[in-house]
Length: 136
Image (cartoon, rainbow, N blue to C red; front, side, top):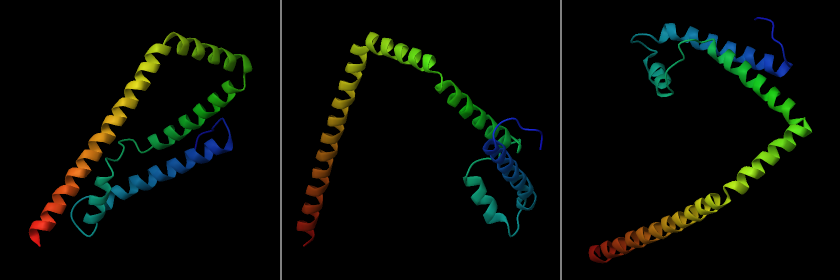
């Protein structure tokens, strides 16, 4: 494995992802064609296609680990966090009417959905009671 800059956790995640990629790549040989491995092939196909580049798991693991470190480092700068808070406050104040209108419409849609579900359930209960009475 190439030299990895960063913490131990990121290196372990990359090594684990590389091992997983190698194991998936070695499984493809026996799974090809009919034979006793056909049920395994069907199960594997249900989980989606295999990546064309098995090493991509390692790259993704390293990228996720590096991104987490960047966010952590940026969050330790108080002026940056204060600036982000001010920017968020300005945007919320600027669009407060739209935000309130969206929240109210979501609440109304939720109430309508609950009422429709209640009516539907009442209809189903009434139908089953009618079927029970006519069947007896």
